[in-house]
Length: 356
Image 1 (tube, rainbow, N blue to C red):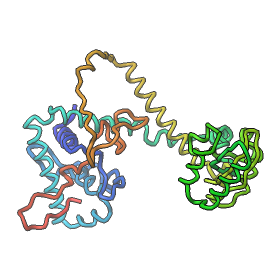
Image 2 (spheres, rainbow, N blue to C red):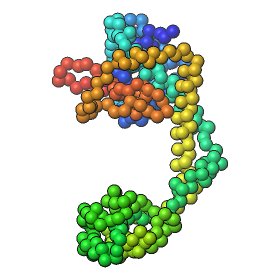
Image 3 (tube, one colour):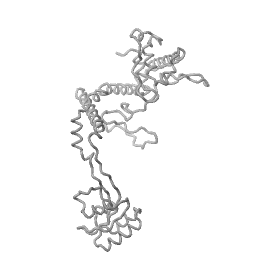
């Protein structure tokens, strides 16, 4: 069972939809106070309707701020300001609980979000990374995907294939006159090319290398002889007719060694392992649970298909962690600042001290 204080904290966290204790820079905060004995930690610094705020909890909250923010709270007076915010937090939590917000569907859902995030973090963060990926496995992946790391030089062209050389010479002359005019070349393709496959793409031919068996050798030689993007070559005779070739792209040779991509592969395999581990974990839990699906009731669910406006939330899914959005919160929803980290309420005109 949770204590009243624990429930209060979880309730306000749920109400705020916050993700966890991070400082204003977004970096992960320190895990706890240093240099405190257990006896010191248990000392009570304040009580709110019987709910104790201990020295340990106070120190933990202060030390979860960034170093710059923590420096503000070295004096007793500043510590009193921070403590006042913690008191406000407990007062707000107690009032929210008194009004039954702990049973509100949105709050319950947000609480589940926070618990799921905590569960997944505890289950997977560090465990998979600590295990690492053995180097032989990294090398095996490199060898099996060598085409991703070693590729010959490639070019991309657009072509016009004509039946006779006279027509080919004519269109080549027109294309060379305006080599940077892409529309002109497409128009010439539409008017004169007899190669139906490339004609539907405005003459475009995929990237290919010098050893591509599917491309005519003469076309390959003509394409690699062109120096600049937009250059047009003289007609080349092929089995289908005469090809006028225009250079539209060039890829340099790629030759990355295992040592160069070792870390990249390790990160990739780590992510894949983590994703699979999460999926297996959830699958195992579902197998143990009694899950009943009443698919016919889905027809009763209305869905607003109105296109989202500017600033609308994005995709609520996150690969490998079902029900979590890209920001890391299960079920979606923005990350907000919890009340104990909001500026205290002060009369207008008075500068509020920050609890950070």
